[in-house]
Image 1 (cartoon, rainbow, N blue to C red):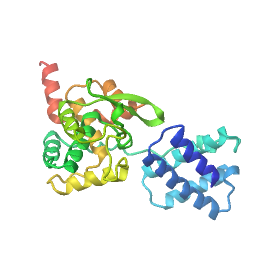
Image 2 (cartoon, rainbow, N blue to C red; image 1 turned 180 degrees about the vertical axis):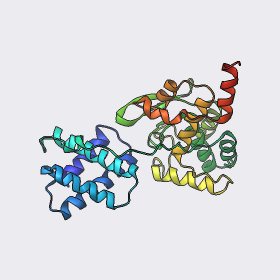
Image 3 (tube, one colour; image 1 turned 30 degrees about the vertical axis):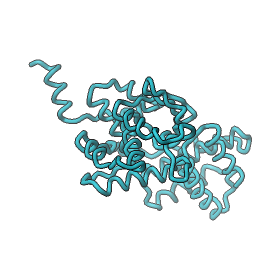
Length: 285
């Protein structure tokens, strides 16, 4: 539909949403339009009774609360767009509350596991070197996968070891990388044209999110770690290790590019060793 197509274009070009997020919006809207079309509902004149019917339908699909919440949020954003463009007179989804979500601790690797992951990658060839640098960069910067695939070599300040990244909502921020990542970056760029994107495939095109996810899965196949690891796991690991070593939560918020501190709050879990250490250092009795 033209309204959906223009909305997705708006998310990409004006809000700079990642390919992954746009894909999820598209899937959520496709499901919604299957429902309204089957129910002969005009989506531009939707009423409360129709919204209640859709929510009941979602309930019968045995979906997780996170999925239902995402679909409601997608529709809220979509109808905001329709309201701005004058297609509808109000955003009926502003009155719909998202279901309560279970608070899940983020999945992350401990220090031994991240060392094993990094050490397992053979860097004697160009593909292995790219893989090692990719993991080092995720762990050093805490970038989202959508941010990492869009990093250009011109975005890197080699002297200060910083990278300019474009986050959600076209928000630019600076992230940092350390000596380990710096070493592999120098080796990686020795035989690479310094124009264009940092991470490219064999065709010279920038890596897609799916290609990065495949690389991480493939690395994990050959090591003993049983934890399910994705690029986002490395972002969780970055934040957790910073906090475990005494970083201020607002600093971590800035580094992760979170708009709200409450989002960063999921990382305030710390290891029992860290808790014990803080307790005995601060409570002298």
